[in-house]
Length: 227
Ligand code: CDP
Ligand code: CDP
Image 1 (tube, protein in one colour):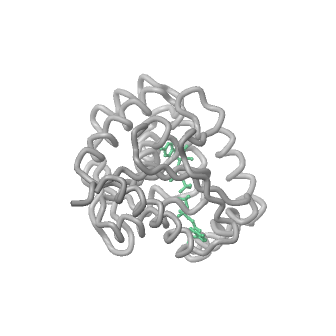
Image 2 (cartoon, helix red, strand yellow):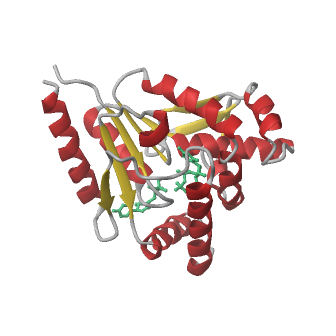
Image 3 (cartoon, protein in one colour):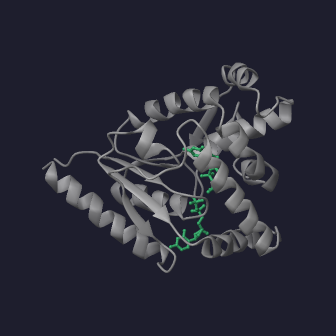
């Protein structure tokens, strides 16, 4: 029988990680774990409850009493915070612009990394984020580092926003993406960086299906190695 693999997909904001990861998970009947949604959910709770976003100890205390769960949904997987659905709420611009501060706190990273490893233990998994190949699943058989030009990524975010009725100008989005990528790449603990054994894929001029096909070929090759 074919081995159930760990597939780690990392990269900067709006490179297409979650869109592609979901499709890969469906194709191979693997579990999909959106680790960015977990950092967003923690950020939302801190904002709602008045916990300072850079107070590592207060965030740790909050996390000890925080339940984050994913439930299958179509087309989106649903996210629940302490039993309340927050799928849309965690995508709001104020959460997006604060999440990197919370994600830089070591206490938060340690807690969520632990939860992510528990999810991955259940079987074949596609996990997307910033530090999956380097830190969360360092032994993942398949590691992909997705990139695209910042222009293209700002345009993708602009289109996604327009569908949600959000009309932030494209140059503001570009600045926000660059600021977040800079924070994520320069933090002390498990920063965004390409794992030495990751395959780098530039998606700037590729369609979603082209990206999914390229990654699927890599996964199929790996599976055959284990046959
Ligand atoms: O979808 P988008 O690119 O906007 O971001 P996301 O994947 O939802 O992640 C939101 C933020 O969470 C990132 O900008 C990081 O600050 C943080 N994050 C992280 O630090 N480590 C991860 N494994 C995933 C996300
Ligand atoms: O998870 P991440 O922030 O990396 O990106 P995303 O939330 O999947 O958003 C990427 C957006 O770009 C989505 O609207 C996709 O439809 C679009 N897109 C893509 O993901 N891949 C391409 N090759 C082209 C467009």
